[in-house]
Image 1: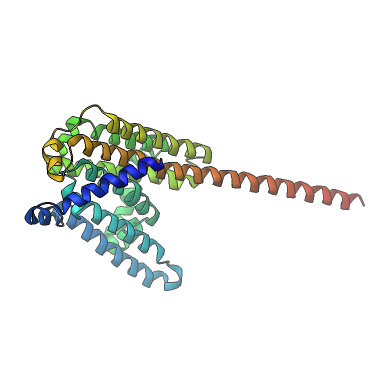
Image 2: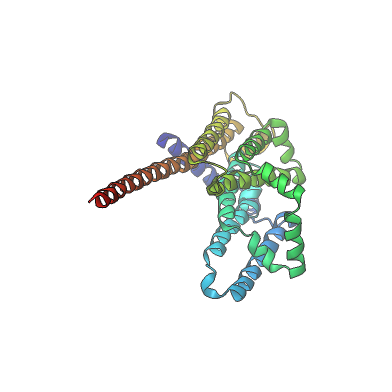
Length: 313
């Protein structure tokens, strides 16, 4: 694994160095920030509403009863979304496959779990008028919406939807379509982020009894396996999967095959490593919980025996 990480670092450094070897006009265009309305307007709107909602809740509930942590975590998630959608990562991702993969990893491994931890829905609801808030609450309690949510947020469904989105969008036909249509590209990002939110929600919200510790470990490790398999297929493919990058990658000083290999390694190693570490952390937590249960049972048994001896005497 350390060798793969070193290879990624070396190739990425080569790609970054090539950015600054280009003509000044091309380099400036490639490194410019994009502020298309499809991404910028929703991001700004959500940020403004969350800040308004936070301070309204703070006034209503009192400063001591409302922690700053949800807003801080949401801010981290929001910054990661801006980096993925508006920074040069977005523009260069249409010319280099490995940068495109980096964009997807930011959405799936950083933005999605941070948003789940932040739970910004409450902040958003507090930002809108009370009548709207009551309307949203009533709609959320409707039978059809509750059933739909319970269905798609079940761990098995969340796992499957995320896996389907990941594999389907990397099929050459669909992936090529994202490079030639902003609308389809937006659908790809929305499906990655949406299914990743479901995936992390089912994992983080498992304390409500929907996912046992053992099942959660399997849930995470199987995801690490199938994402690593896809990364390995991209890395060791005998030819490039995406013809469009054959026309753009050489401008950055690498072949389409080298570009795809870096992208495959980025999906294979960082994604697999993060998910494996999460799975190992859950194994450790499960072992500690088992130890605590055993200690509690032993303590209870000793207390019971002591009470029995005292009663007899």
